[in-house]
Image 1 (cartoon, one colour):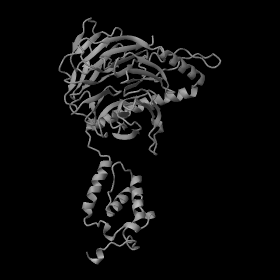
Image 2 (cartoon, helix red, strand yellow; image 1 turned 135 degrees about the horizontal axis):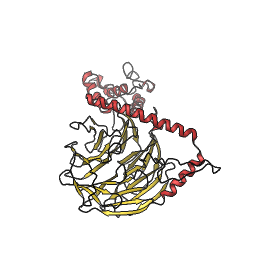
Image 3 (cartoon, helix red, strand yellow; image 1 turned 135 degrees about the vertical axis):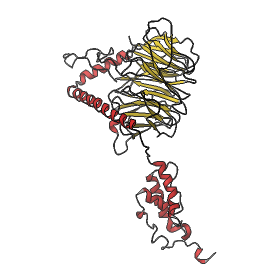
Image 4 (cartoon, one colour; image 1 turned 90 degrees about the horizontal axis):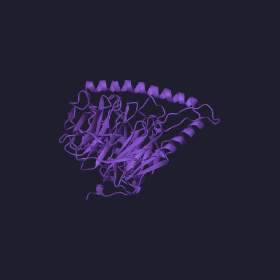
Length: 495
């Protein structure tokens, strides 16, 4: 060993010049912090390490240098291009990236913008007027009346669908509440009459080769149009005929998208315009489809580190929320294609989510047995996660959650509310019930009903003998439908 290679301890000259010698000199810019760590021969980042933690590690290293470092401990910059290559790779993993879009995508974004501006303007104007005229005594009476009526929910009917051999994974009401669509793990789709739960339509074999796990009605334009997704990766659209036949009618898809995803499709959702559909998948992406031109997806969006299990459209149509088995929720602005918020709070995967009609509350259901309520008004530049409340809702995985969405504009209060008066028993008025409660389904075999102001449980519906896979609330708020592992469809009524 040459004499100049002998380690020198406590050399005051060692860190002078081009290298750090005082913790106060540690840079604040993350790129410079990474560079100094590389010069010290330290890993530029650890798994899960943030910018602040990385800088703290550098400060600790610099403060220890006078007692422990050696002259030859620095990695010299022999090749700047090679030095920067690993940093570039590391930075690329953290940065957003963009891909060119088509003219059709541009037109769809313009349509989303126009539609959402009109809807949000009307909603905001309505909420402003309500806030000016709000009577808290009436509101309190109104809420108590709703909760009293919700506590009367009871089992109306149950049905084992003839021909079905496996779990019923999804159930949804049609827009006029007269039909109930069911998706089965045997690959079949069934449409039941709500009043007697008899099968009106069923799909033939081969349209879904594997489990049907995604189902949605067009609630905005066409009462008889629905979309389904299967584990084989296909998306099928169905037009339901209005028939008075007493025998079940066989139906075939009016439109199909073969191999829409490489893996299982977990959710299919109609956009509020009724012109577009979003599909979420186990290939860790979600896709946006134009129903009139379904040959190619308008968007194939990444952003989750694990399977994307669920999604929900904001009622104004400008935002889409998605949830994955990475326990992360994201909110996407469809008008520009950006991820604008991240929902971090669940410790297990997110299996369902739904927006309230008020436009600012979002409910997420998770494998951690909780339903979390998020308020997008709480999001700001300080990276607040917007969590408003966490409901310890079930004892096992929560498979579905749905807010009450009133769909009958001619009945502003539905049938859950009665006329309320002020503190002097005058000025009678019927207040709107839209979004005033939500329902959750769970693997513990229960369907629970929750008040949407104080998030208190109002009623538990027990009837399934095994896991409950899905639930939905009718547009008038008077019925709840559920399906489960026991292969049954159960209808609950407040009437």
